[in-house]
Image (cartoon, rainbow, N blue to C red):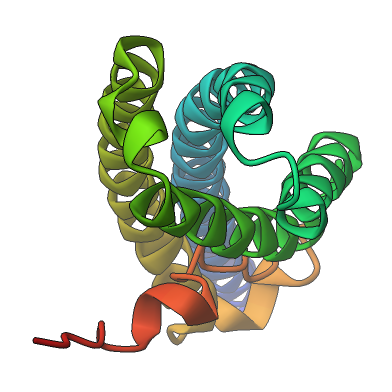
Length: 192
């Protein structure tokens, strides 16, 4: 009788040990998957950051060029400079995303000024800077899409069952999307 009880105890211990190992393996795979996704988000944000820095570096040149032709547009020029300063001082992605939206709006207003100044529109330096800014904005849009794709994957994984049961305990949370600024959401007005 003692032998059968020992075998039952060993089988029960074996099953319990097997379940603990399976849960441990699942936790390890889940954690490593979440770490990989978080790293993709960080990498994608770093790519956006590179392009944003490039844009920030262009802004003083554009402002100085416009200043020479449109000195009485002081309010718009100051708005761009202030928005740039705010964007460069933000460290958290959510704050930076908001500040970059404000900067995009201020830049759009600055570029609209050029329409009122034919000499500015013809200035080769301004045209080159405008082309460089357009190229940079396209790069930002591409990097923003890659970032949002990575964020979508991470946020989906963090919310999905059964990962949601342990994601918070393992220190994983949803990341913010880099959404288009309000100015880019409005359709352009066309007048003839």
